[in-house]
Image (cartoon, rainbow, N blue to C red; front, side, top):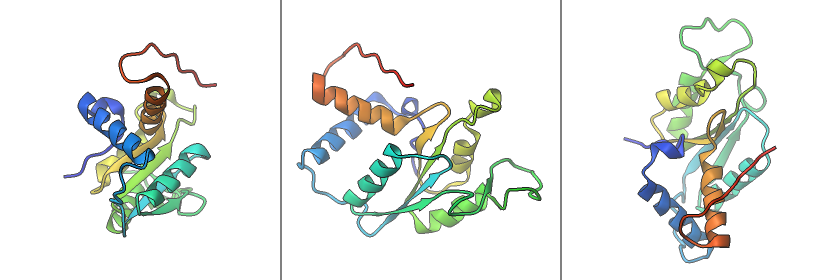
Amino acid sequence: MHRDFLSTTDWKREDLEELIQSALAFKRGEEKSRPLAGRSVALVFFNPSLRTRASMQVGVYELGGNAVVLEPGGTSWTLEHREGVVMDADKTEHVAEFVRVLGRYCVAIGVRTFAALKNWEEERKDPILNAFAKYSEVPIINLESAMHHPCQALADMMTIREKAGAGRKKVLLTWA
């Protein structure tokens, strides 16, 4: 059984704290393990990215792994995520097959697919991300979706911890 990382709300506080402490130790050079040595992680970008893409590729590398970067409709086939749809338009492959193939090669799949701002009622359900999670036999990592950006949230917590110390803080985060 694998464990997805789609939202911080799906994890216990203790588990998130352990992730943050492990990341801080790794950043300080106290942790030298390379748990991804000889393994690959797929990073699927439906949307453009600078910081998330660079940090994930570097992170996979520094943990000993190989990042396989795919951009549906760019460096790979266009994908359909809805079930029962006749694929005779602009979609060339269903996410179910795409995920099964990647799962044979990779130990995890990161997915970045934020809202297109076309249908909020649909997009707020994170349908593409959830389709990946539904069909995958390896962990799915949310690299940003319409509703969540859990890796960024953990990075923010690390920064707050480094700058202001441990313990409860009142913090205001804004994005433009």
